[in-house]
Amino acid sequence: MIRKSKKEIQKYYQINNVASTYDNRRFVGLGGEYINSTEITTTLNATKKHLSVNSPKVLDLGAGRGRLSIPLKKAGYNVYCLDSSESMLSYLTKEFPRDHVFIQSVFDKFPSAIKYDGITSLRFFDHFDETDQIKILTNGVKSLKNGGKFFLSGLSSQSLEYLVSFLFPYGRYNYYLPMTSYSKIFKKAGLKIRAYESAFFIPRGVFLHTNNLPGLQKFLIKIDTFITRVFPVLGAMKIFVLEK
Image (cartoon, rainbow, N blue to C red; front, side, top):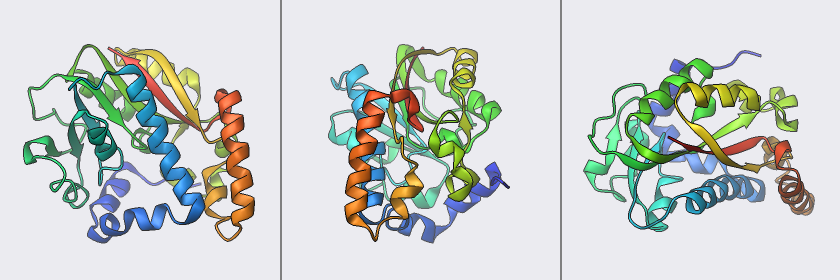
């Protein structure tokens, strides 16, 4: 399998029509809606559980069009957004003050002297290998208050989705790592794992490829939510709650 390079992925998200059609292409039908809502809800619930909404400042890395940033804002957080894609972030200037939107690479020094209570990231870190994930986290920790929380999603290689990832685009664009690797990455960045949430026992690609079978999809969704709730270790997506 030939995985897309970091530069190829970054270049892809700079394309204007990618930003304008992003949601419509990725989250179509009942299966797409389930994937989208589950990814957002799982991350949002973990944030609410471990970070008060009493006006703390939260920085959303890889914010894109605001898939997580906007729900965080609606939940009561004081949200700042960072992404290297100007075309993606152009959609957020209507939702956030301009001084809350940063167009830059996550590898560069963050442009604000603000210390954040929390840093979030949804489906962003899995585009990078272990070395780059450490660099991003180490960079981000500098802007995090002592005792602040880092919420990020990662993909587990100890999952059914990883075993069949070569069948779907996820395998070309994403890195799946074992829990031992995540623990080492977080430790090197000066972060401790406090908890994690889990989602998707059934590979997400299955939901997208069964959109013409709504009855089957509803059954699969029930199975998926049950198994990931009872056996969270089997979920492909992990939402880690980390503390500085």
